Length: 421
Image 1 (cartoon, helix red, strand yellow):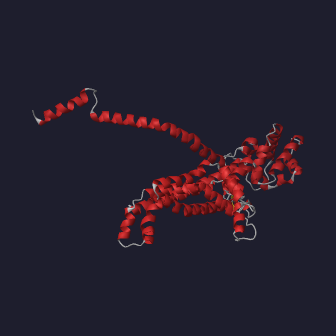
Image 2 (image 1 turned 90 degrees about the vertical axis):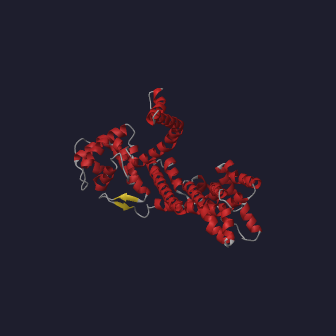
Image 3 (image 1 turned 180 degrees about the vertical axis):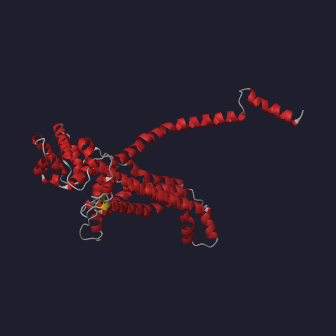
């Protein structure tokens, strides 16, 4: 029997039984395996889609979607698009406005577009409500003059520019205001006046407090994580329980406990006065110090755990090898040990910082008026002023800043990994 005959004889059973070659059967098996894996992951993907991706998408959409004026004053919003913006509109625009005001006021829905216009220019709410009450008594002729006689602001070009700018269902007004910017009469993006520029200061304050908390967590967690990684297992497990203990306590309870400890008649002030450090109570609460202390206590475990996991995996042989080559303990620590813990440092700092920038309850309870972070104002616009578009815009800015920080972290980690490799 020749070699070719033997080869054909041995390969024939692979395709005779099913009519498929081995390559096709392997491909079908691989597709079946991938389908099974996809079905297993599908519930998790759907959960993330509906509980994470969809709300974020809704949030970003809400920051630019503002249909109140277009839906509340439809005829005016449509006809004013052809206005040149240089002089008071023609009679046709006033006719459309009168019809919209009459309908909206009769159906008791004029307050919605009026409130939206009031965000752009304070006073628009009262102007539209006043016109809505009087428009039923206007004659059908010369409505332009009747509006101006009722309130001179209807004869000002700026009033109509505000209406035209808000007449579209989509706007960048709230996103610009979240960055202390606005559009001028000519449509250019300019800074708002100094008395209205508050959001960038709040954003900087949020990042600064988060950076302070991250630095405090790192300073406290590094030696503790090193101790946990080098102690015997029994002792390390006991200390780890103490580290995880805050997870079993309500955030509100932990924050309230710091109010009790740091208040003027609290335990900390009494101990300091007993030791003779201060003659009078020191203000430790309702200021920046109290915010940093309380947030550090809450977020400390999120720094310890990444550091501990990395330190536990570092072989001690590297430090012994460096010492055997003549390096002193300080050099061994900084040149050999610390570089190996940088992944844990980066992961812990990123985790703590991102969680800190979104904190709301702790700064609201233990901080003063100048210590409130951006999340406080998101809640303010959501629950009190009911300006959901502004709340969504502030949240979108915070979300974008977080993504930028994560991108920088990923870039730095990638560069460090390349260097280590």
